[in-house]
Image (tube, rainbow, N blue to C red; front, side, top):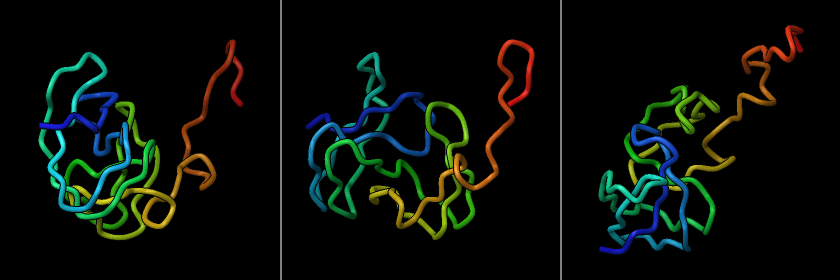
Length: 107
């Protein structure tokens, strides 16, 4: 089984493609430590360093990567799909990001 998806946290909604992935391939997803998490069949081509959906998600789902919500899905996304700007809106630019405290001050 080819290992080609890296997960920052084992229960993240998306992993990162560690190589160009092709629709129809079955790819092993592993954690940063190399522990196997799941096998995913690609439903889209996914370029190197882009996100791959680890599970089916509905529209307006708070997408988890790095163990935290990074954005919200703008459409339904199938497991094995390419996740990028066409189906994910970043929290960073949407005004939905959490307030960050730095040295006791809010920013």
